[in-house]
Image (cartoon, rainbow, N blue to C red; front, side, top):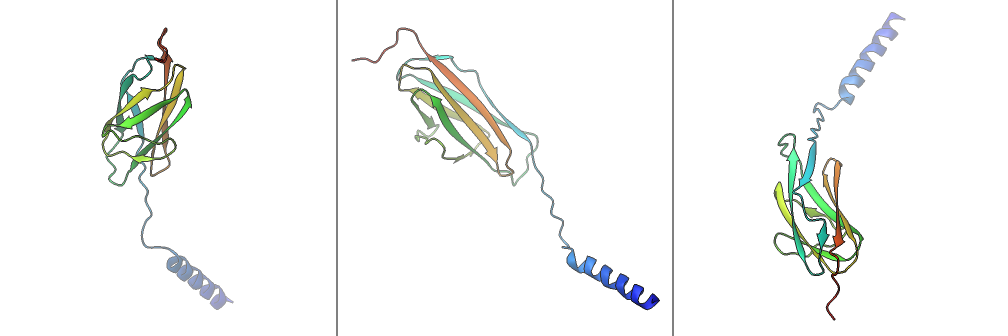
Length: 142
């Protein structure tokens, strides 16, 4: 009986050590936030507003990757990156720098709202919302 218990304990210990991976799976998640410089609350048709962003990281985790996308919820406009590339809604773009600029141009006389969502490769997400009212008296030139 003692022999069976001893064998069972030895077998259990062997399974415990053999079943364990020798590498520790440590994931370091680095918290972050995104901020933007203040921008105008109004815009004219065909006017472009520069928006300056800053990615704020709690530490410099080397494996952290950041991306952003945008979605326009009201109005009509276009968004360009600092290289002049037209950005497409719902498409994600890699952040190449912690400081970056986007350029929003109005294409209508209506209220214009859009969101910039920044996310990392650890599924952390931060969103900034922008809203521009049409400057009074501004209409399309016909």
